[in-house]
Image (cartoon, rainbow, N blue to C red; front, top):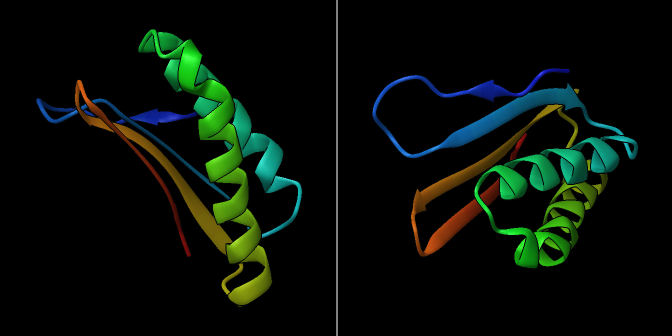
Length: 86
């Protein structure tokens, strides 16, 4: 799936919809790597991948929704937000 860049003047944000499945964790890590690379945050990539993997694992284990939405955003130069919405 192709990441969707939020239009408008808000903070940079990338989001994808995926099935609620274990394989989605790999897609989530790719999204984090891509976004962090674009934002010159390569030094945080490993930590971001760990966090997003845990969030996906929680969604797979504890929800019954058929799909999840992965979100990687940068609300300010000092913050990165990683989310999995079910």
